[in-house]
Image (tube, rainbow, N blue to C red; front, top):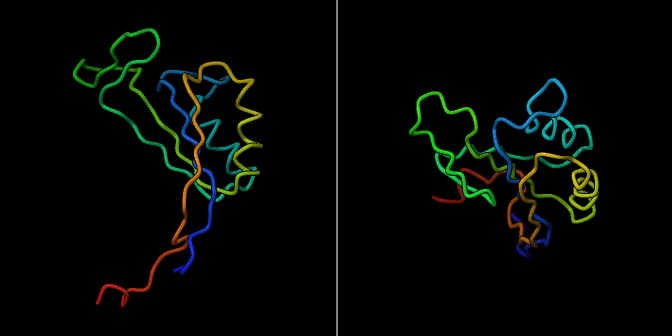
Length: 116
């Protein structure tokens, strides 16, 4: 663990599960692009409820809902996040992208004895 936190950037990309980029789901295309660019890692979160600027409610309560909200979250160096952001600015189907500074204390896993 680092004694001094390092400042990186966190990007959150909000989109609907049904959005597409060519033949594949948009979120999968974003994951592949981030991986190809060598970003440190990301996680895709699937929401059970949500709405955006259209105010249309998207919910898992409806049987076979095909447009649940997704959030893709990435943490990396500011330059890497900015490079991905410039590419995504041209992509249709993304509802919102946010970027904020984060303090990273641990980047690769802790020591099992740290909690003993």
